[in-house]
Image 1 (spheres, rainbow over the protein chains, first blue to last red):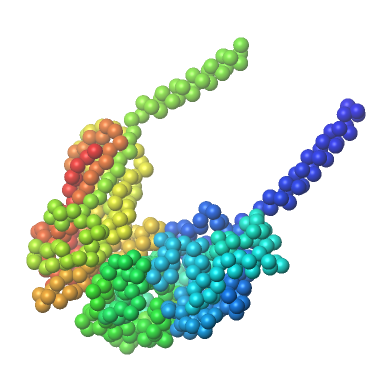
Image 2 (spheres, rainbow over the protein chains, first blue to last red):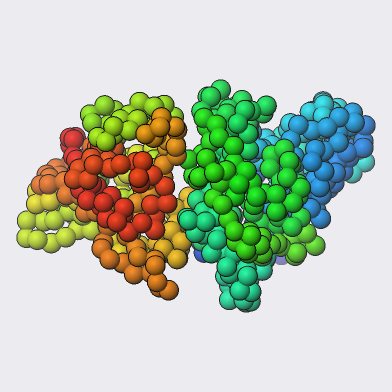
Length: 349
Length: 254
């Protein structure tokens, strides 16, 4: 027994060494599942998380660093966060965003929150991109935005003193490519969850609405008045958007075909994605082209400003009169309700 | 030797279990939903074009059609009801869920009747109860009694002045919302009876909705008078219920 001991001890030592080496080589990122808000968990379907891009602590941190780093742009001047500002619920307060070439984007930047619950995974105002992972591809190479090439981006990141190690920690490889960059950014973007507005707290029984806010909610839900719920949903869908595409009567003739330019179907001309009505206090200007500066202008549009066209959504009512003809009191109440969906915690975090 | 006997016993036990399971004749059923306008097939490819005419003479086009069915039920020869506690949102616009295959297997045999509910029975028409329908924004405001839409049929029609006007033919539980609290004068979910069926194998039921019937029988629907804001219109909802009785039929079984 004693004679065998040195051999066994040596064997054990070698096994331990082997195990130790294995641990270093196959570094596993730390799972970091989305913290799903109570109302989301209770009322709507689970978020979309690709099986090949599960949320990890390292991936999210890397995505956040990339989101705020101008290294993605051709001249190191513009990061994602330049046009998607946290204090504006990750949109731009300018009607159009200024790119690296001092040229303007064609549409208003979309706010970024609750993106994991975009079930059809059609992104942008015109639904031109499928999946959050693919969404970040285009802004990097758009001459009106970051004006870069993915080859340049990959070179910059691969020769960076920090990024190769961060990618290794997040994805197990230090060889950086566009796929991993956009995966990391998508992981970060999925953590941008807005669910703590006053109205959320009201639904959870933590606060009450003022009479004006309650009346505004009634305008929103009343098919005879606002009839906003058919596209923006009821209190039982905390997203406050159907994530679908509608022509909401902005124009009688289209300079921007929206979804129609993507599908090639004339029946889709003038249709744009329904934005969430969360965080409207932070997301002016409004509509795909940022044409409205204030909420009052938005409400007036639906009340009196509708323009008829062949693809206007049939849910737009009383088009001949310009809209649903809200009273001034209804308008003020509706605005008060809409502002209860402001999530101050979201822009602080 | 004991080991051999023990092993044989285990094998026999497993085999006997397998035999026992095979004696249970349970099969899957599938419901396929197709759509016509008085016999002419309608798919989402036919949407957004004025190609249909109602009995009242209005030309119309369809832009959105989705509806919920629930509680597929089989009635055995001794009157027992086998209820499949599930629902399905048929979304013709996006060509989704036109096939509904409930997970509950059905015992083979002859059944006196097969039916389903267009919409929800009142006790199952509960606000916020169904995540898929909340997600699809299919709910009905609490001021109109809550619960869910039964159907959303939207589009445009040519009015008497040949102007193009939107219509929202939305079916819900008929409600009287004129008072402080909604009241419900008449149940407007529809029990659709498909008749006697025999299930001997995995079986597909091909069910057809004749969309034209919504505007036809017994009430000749005048879209000029009833085209929008129909949800709070109690009489309109009851008329939809009446017309809905003849909308579905079982085309074939295979």
